[in-house]
Figure 1 (cartoon, helix red, strand yellow):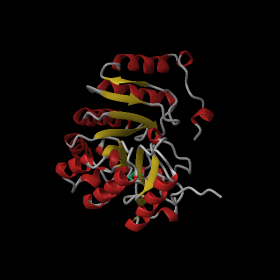
Figure 2 (tube, protein in one colour):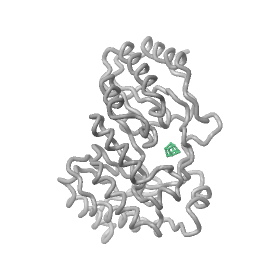
Figure 3 (cartoon, protein in one colour):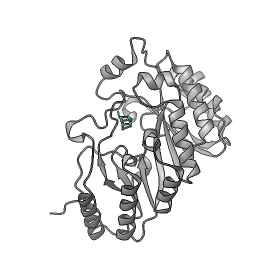
Figure 4 (cartoon, protein in one colour):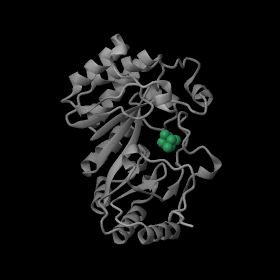
Amino acid sequence: MYSFPIDYVEPVFRPPSEAKSLILPVTNGCSWNKCTFCEMYTQPQKKFRARKPEDVRQDIANAAKSLGGIKRVFLADGDAMVLPTRRLLEILSELKAAFPELQRVSSYCLPRNLARKTVEELTLLREAGLKILYVGMESGDDEVLERINKGETWESTRSALVKIREAGLTSSVMVLNGLGGSTLSRQHAVNTATLCNETQPDYLSTLVVSFPQGEQRFREGFGPDFEPLSQQGLFEEIRTFLEHLQLERTVFRSDHASNYLVLKGNLGRDKQKLLDQVSLAITNPGAVPLRTEWQRGL
Ligand code: SF4
């Protein structure tokens, strides 16, 4: 019987754009694991730990033996960048030796992972093969960030994204539409836009906040004034966000399954076009293709 060469602890997550990558766990779970909207690593088997170097080495050797032509590798789980630079360089060197056709390595990255890493260290990692870091910004509003227990601020996220840019790495940023409910919607949209403007990410995507396992944990952390946004409210928040964005060359997407309205474009070039699409969805929802609840598949 064929067995996959990597011994995964399920569930395993990756960004949609890493569908063709070999997913290599170098840690298990997320070292923070306290964001109240996040259910990715809450099961007991996903308790955070760094994997043993010999286990990672064995997975790489097994993958090299049984899978040909690996060009992309995604380092899992939630925040591989928590590992010391020395350890990451070792992993990147093992990957390069095992997969001669390797073109890029990527990982999720918490802003806090980079607090003690210098631009020089990140540059060394880029030279060793790391190319893309996926950063869950979620919000640029400090009040929202505190209420969701993100453990980050506008400034800590800015600092991490600036380091990524200065090191020549590609940044892909995720923002959560609806995260502040109706109470904090406007400040969430405006301050997230200012953080994006300040950091000019290469890729920016929006997802709609959702709670497949129920809202209770989120509501307890947020406070009694959480009022989920209606579909119209979500669109209005995206419109405010887009209006305040001043990006120069960012690829923008809202095509994750959680979104009702799919938007794609380059910012700033397509800003007005995207704003027109959102405005139409607000004033005349029947005139634009919107995903139904079952199509959102949550
Ligand atoms: S840092 Fe990311 S993976 Fe960790 S709990 Fe927060 S959202 Fe989830």
